[in-house]
Length: 155
Image (cartoon, rainbow, N blue to C red; front, side, top):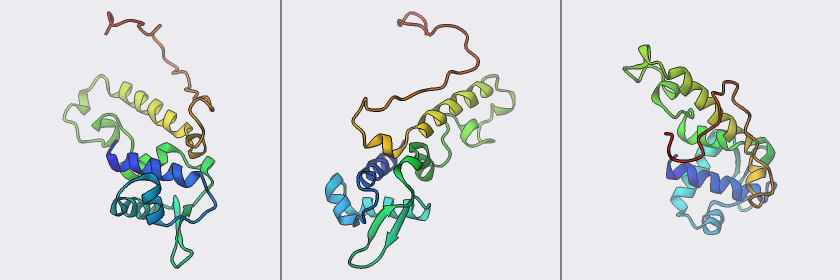
């Protein structure tokens, strides 16, 4: 993930703390201690994607386009980074010269789906809660070859 994506998640979490309020870019910049040009760029990108609403004028600013429980971390990442993929063959088919005969591609697709699923389960409403206040549940993978190693001897 890029620094801009990290910043976007921080900004969206800050907005989720007051989901009905209008927030000026300058105020958000001061609250999260990020440079105003960076904050403005991210807010515009999120507004173009529909996650934020923007209003001009003295009482204007940015607000969430949907309730915090309806916006996932995966959605924010996808807007800033594009499709979530741990390898090129999953995120951008045709980019890898090994793709046609790769024996691990299906496994990467399964791993990618698990990562996306986990990120999609985490909502902005979860992000505003203190750590440990909400359980993160990962679904069990359907194909499991046995217990995971518990020490560093098997890698």
